[in-house]
Length: 541
Image (cartoon, rainbow, N blue to C red; front, side, top):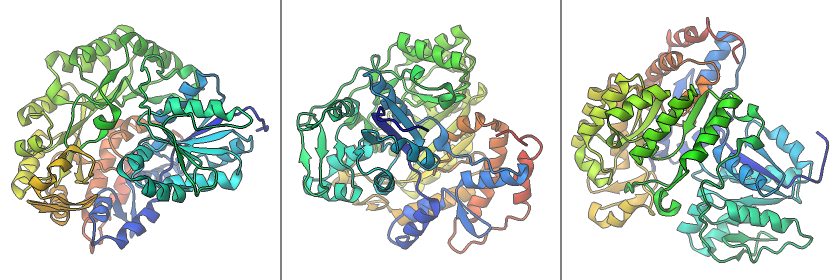
């Protein structure tokens, strides 16, 4: 790669921290937090070592084919990074993306050798700042002049939850130059980039920033909440080589969420629901189809809200005969029989169902505006139409009891969604349920909590018991291997049937490794895993 001074910005997507490093850190606090229990519920103990499902899959495929495919869900186009590149390119900036920091360090070195004016780091999936620090240190090592900008949900959370002195302490630890405090932030980024074109850039008039020149003294600019037009700033995939997003791509058609679940902070900082118009979405899908995209993941929190719009989108995909395999979040409480039929005809292959509980009282505490009977009906209709159902459940929410857990267990066994995941409750202090902390007796934060009816230790034990006893649906844990791995792996040549066989077998290993002193007996399971792939996937990657 030849060096050039024309590169304005490098946008960096996700940095997935080394699993063993995370494991060792969480083991140290295992007795004081549910974090380690949550990690165990999202990994397997295999041949004496705790590993993720994706690592297990890679090891299995290597045995089956002789080649390590290096599969990682972060290979999917990072939609936040793609959106930022499109936004900046529309404003005539020269931008490159490093989609996955883990997989593209050599490319990042080459880009830094071009002396870009800035590196912008997204923080969509981070719960702490250690992955950001790793990226910052890498950039500093290879180019000390490039300005480092950090924004996104994690920075928004830091600025919202902490006073300036605490923010300054955290920002010193991170070590970047500029931080954007806004739930959107793309307009601020474009203004920063415009200022960096000048001989003596002055950031004082750019809203929503904290910036420093010495990592000691920090300066703040006024807050001006952004409200960027969804249609005007829809991703233009024409700015990208098609091999970046083919065959599997994530897109969004809405910003924010129509609901206000009491455990969720997203609507509070994202604002009111904002929708992309039908015509703009239609053009985007036409471009993706003409480029060869096969699998589309709609990441809208409530894709089927409003229902008439959702039906129109399905009809549009049917009219154009796109033939996409598409996946999305879905609310069973907001669908009718026509919607289920349109989903099947338009190519829906799977939906993520935020069920959260099978107990009416807990659903009320969650402000879910959902009915258990409607859940039952929706799951049945989806399965009747051949649509994969993936249900998530929160264990330990305020008000949770052994009775409500049993009701949820009964619900999962009765409805038997194809896949499910249990999530240990994590308590944020900036969500609606915290306003009722006194009522529920909530004490503690994160994975270290208790309330009037349960604490994290009881919830952890309940989660283990549920995983051991529930029959029917298949466990698909998190940690970079969950529902969204299905379209990714589909694009890599792994069929849904193989995914199902793999997770069904891996589930047996996961359950055996939930107890601290367990030594899983994997005799036969190792070969069973390999046999799923050996005949079909030689050379597929």
